[in-house]
Each structure stands twice: as C-alpha cells, then as structure tokens.
Length: 307
Image (cartoon, rainbow, N blue to C red):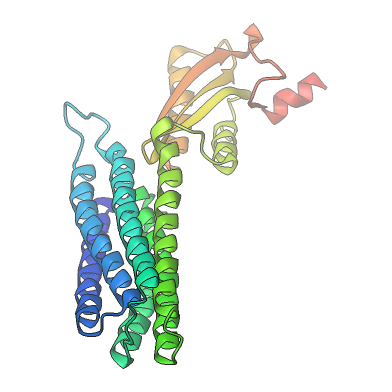
C-alpha cells in the first residue's frame, strides 16, 4: 500500500471509531448523568471532529505535486496536526469546567454497569488504535497520524481514570466521579501540548535527530571517490527533511565523472525514508576548503594521509 492510500485509510478508521465511541459514551451519559462519562463523551466527540479534519487534511497533503506546489503538499501536515491540538485544548477546557462545576454544586450521579462497560471497552479499543496509529506514523513518517496516536494513548489513561471515578461513585465515594472528569481534562490538555511541541519543529525547520545526520554522513562517505564531507545542513521542511552538503573529491575529475559521483551520493541519501530533497556542492579537495572545526567528517583514506 502506498503512503497516500495508507494515510487516508488510517484517517477514516480513526474517524469511524471515534464517532462510534462518542455515540456510545453520549448515550450512557444521557441515561446516567455521570460527569466522568460525560467528560469522556466530550473527549470522543472532539476526537471525532478532529479526525474529520485529519481526513480532509490528509486528502490535501497526499495530492501529487503540481505547478503551484512542485514539492507536493506534505508540508500542510503539521498545520493539520496543530488544528487537532486546538480542538483538543477546547475539549479539555470544557471538560475541566464541567468537572469543577460538579464538585462545587455537589451534583454527582451514580452511573452503574453501563458506564463501567463503555469505559472499559473504550480503553481497550483506544489502546489497540494507539498501537496501530503509532506503527503507521513511523512507517509513513506522518505527523498528523502521530498526533492521532498520541491522542489515543492519552485516551487510554483518561478512560481508565473515568472508570475509577465511576466505580468509586458506585461504591459510595461520589466525589470521585467529578474528580475523574477533572483528571480526564488534564490528560486532554497534555495531549494538546504534546502535539504542539511535536509539530512546531516541523514548521520552524529544526534539525533532525543526530542519528539521521550520521546516516547522511555515512552514505556520503560510502562512495569511494568522496574524500570528505562538510557543511552538512539537514533540516525539517514540513514532516520531511531537506539536506545540503559539500563533498570533497579529486580536482582532476572530468565533469561527467563529478556528475556521476554527485548523482550516486544524492540517490543514496534520498533512499533514507525521511529525506525529501538533497543538495550537493562539489569541492576539489586540493583547494583545502575543509576545516577541522567544521561540522562534517573526513574520509578514511584522506585521514590516513594527514597522519
């Protein structure tokens, strides 16, 4: 399955599951009045709404390149994830407000077995959905799907907290129900913060993890004609990485030979799943542009010559 199809399928699956959970929790809340269950219903409703946004956003981001977007539309994905975060913040604040009002007014309901069943089932479903979304986000390097995975992970804990509150209220400790609702709200807000932090770097072009930079260097130096690599600048452009670097090669290479070296290195680095574009500048090693304090690496053969 290609990336575009896979992401759309994930988005539709998440949307469908969240819609079903919102209806189930909402039905139990209407019949029982439990603040914990109502908080979870609001949480699932927010999940369903943002899932719809994700599906629409993924449809846009998976469109092929065109004249106005020659590199494709993947860079829209972080904005989709941030929109998800806004919805999560709104849901968290609403849930917290309702929980506080319930504690202040003393309006607490005993939910019973229907609430216990729907919350336990939701926790299990959300855990399975979290594992699936996390795997798909890592496979296809999608920040929008990763945001959904993080939200599902928090939902497991919030459903558990709500379950504790409902059981506690059934056992006579009524205040546990709104307290559980408040805990759910904190989990919701934490998810929003986590998504913002995760996607802000994509928008401002932060450097990728050091391990990716090392792999870029390794692939560049794997070419037998490359004597050194320096001025390596990888950075995020949307969810993907662009990288520029300088290669040190023998100055007496013909233009065709130099072109072949550059092409081979570029293709090798582009085969890294996270990489989008690679920009290479060739330096004749005889010019001595290499500087020991520069961020890069010198080839093994050249290093032996300098010792």
